[in-house]
Image (tube, rainbow, N blue to C red; front, side):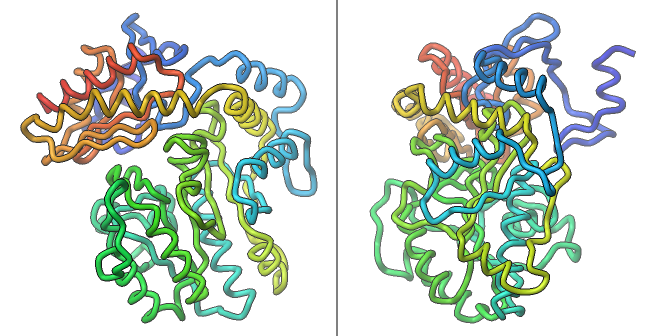
Length: 427
């Protein structure tokens, strides 16, 4: 059995069927922004490995950081023990996140970071005497991960609610923020979406522990960019109704929108912030959930007096070392200028695609480029086109999109935008 046959018969890939396995490209190595396949063909990675490899692949300082840490200590439990990589990473995270966020809880993946945030909110509400508050509100169009509680606050239509109906927690869904990024804001709550959110909170605040939202960019739920002023209003409503505000920055953190965090586009800060994906520059799975002293001390003020969560690989030293090395690069390289240049070039090269038949919208923010079609786009059909054009893209839903590494050159980016255009013409 060849490696590819073994893969098809035994390995289960994301969102795939074992009875009808999707086509696969077998990658032999990755360098810079290029994936080299087993047959020698090469593709520019327009996806940054699901938005995580912001520095590209094989970055020498990051490789060295992980190798050096592996020689010292690959892992040690975080219960009752600590280590310098976790401490150093914590110091760096405090330097780049909003000042009220002082408590850092390391976890294994972005979805778990959201689970932890929701557990924090629920346990906090119970600890301060509001035990009836255990549900959550979230805008439609969101995506927060595939684990149980995170899945319950994903969009009820485009998510997986119909498949797991009866098993998922019942949550409250507000309309998607209606005013897009770049449009004029209005203080009329009937038009800006805050009136609908207020109505939900006014009626159900006795049972709502927290609000979960992706700030500014709704990622895998539809690649929609909305006005940051919505978040200012949501903050005020959460304060009014004693609701914990949770920002899911797993897709947007570490520069993807042109700012270090999407939170930086607005005037307010959340009670809890989730980060993942690019935190290690794509080197390995890792994430963190940060919160305020108010939330942390509130949890500790009542029985059982501790936060009830503790992953086996929490604070993994290898991941902490990789994350610190990634933050070093963000601190010493002109990533803002690079992301700005990517944004400018994508606007120029993607905007003409708006004239194509089937294109519903074109939008760009930071190092995110989206061509939204007026019909479903098959990732399986895009698969052979990627190899033919030498650019790895994986469309989903109605969207042909890219989130390239920040080190992508102008020529490489032009190949990515060209491939997006070709897919928009034929898919």
